[in-house]
Image 1: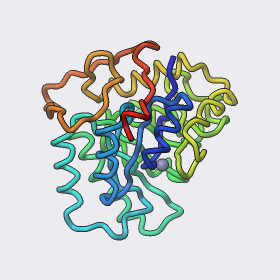
Image 2 (image 1 turned 135 degrees about the vertical axis):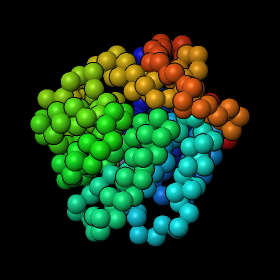
Image 3 (image 1 turned 90 degrees about the horizontal axis):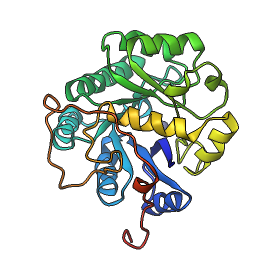
Image 4 (image 1 turned 30 degrees about the horizontal axis):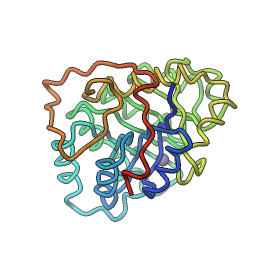
Length: 265
Ligand SMILES: [Zn+2]
């Protein structure tokens, strides 16, 4: 058995190491603005267990430079283990039309490169469902999901949907094999290690969660050997999304190595 955090953000290196010492060995980590993309890729290239995602968060659309789309595509050309996120819509924030434009470009990129998408949908699940209907078949992780049972059902009908939770209620109506847990650190539960008590509070079984995590990653990432112990390195050979045929993998204790704090100083 192993522990993971299905959604967090760029943290200082020592916080990843601290979380690893608290038994969280895998992190799906989202860089939400081009300014952070390379910082995350640098950390992911030197610490094991970090699965990086790059995107434009709907809160950070205001000051984008004109070349962000080209930069994004270049990174997806280069890194076969990169996912898309955090992206989405937020009706409590300004400029929804521009949010949608940015969101849709990122969805097109995910389709083109066959990558999973990590979606922020605060108060906006219906709008998001309408847009996702134009991009059917994407593998999506709906982060901090707090929608209704019928919204979850609709999202599941048009995407390969996983729901990452930070609260108890949605677990009552979501299928157990589609649930993940997250900290949304540094803003959410503050420490990735708190996902362990969160899962306990919800009454989730880690064997089931681990199987869900492996299946989710394996559905879009090119896994090597005993996946998902793979982590992004600068030496990775780019793999064409057209020729790749990813398969879900499972793994056991022996593949769940803690980050070696000495080696990463
Ligand atoms: Zn987040």
